[in-house]
Length: 285
Ligand SMILES: [Fe+2]
Image 1: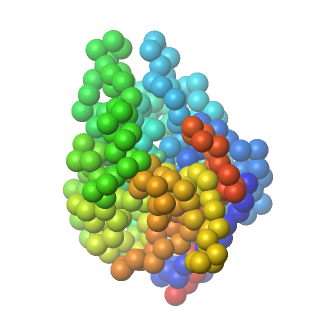
Image 2: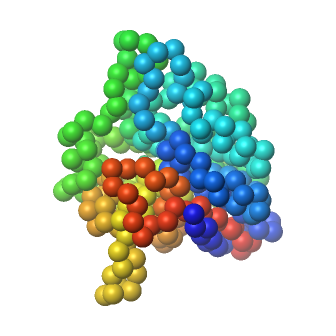
């Protein structure tokens, strides 16, 4: 597991360290907790996809049997921990949210909190919203099936029109209240592509710092001698040769920082693409 550190100027008193975790996929790398215990961040921020697999059929709750629940308890002992919802959280039901609340971890589900000079928001994946529009008649808790139809999978990897399928659009109605609140705005947005493809236009919003994951570094990375840099092969919703798979990207108003993620899941193994924990140091401007 690699530690990456980015420094960002912000109107804060002294400096603040944020740990960005993404794409745990119900897996806790052995090196994760020791890293956090040494670096002692002021906040731990999880940018979605902490779950993986299917929703349970019976009475069991998804969160109860997840490794993430145990990890959340440990993270909350290290620093205040906030989580936003990625596409794999489509299966969460209200009782799962109660399980998470008992760990001490706070869920930002299209909502925000004020933390002194910081205004921290969590943008929920449009996949979760689509799932909530459905209902499982079997157990009344979870949506009927995974929202990934063959059509949408095709759309994820070959987004020819470079637009997000309207079925998977996020809810931005709360963002205006979020932006009206004074402070340094940090938004956990699992999907980095929300900032780029019309009609979402997250990058047109004056958000100082967006923290994302989802792209898994492009899964297989290669070195381009022409560009003198490493790039990824593919990422869901961005398609092949995606642009936003890791690192810091400067936008019109602020920065987008993308984690390559912390899990090894996926139909194709990671190659030249170590898992990553990101630390963002906010330095007084
Ligand atoms: Fe994801």
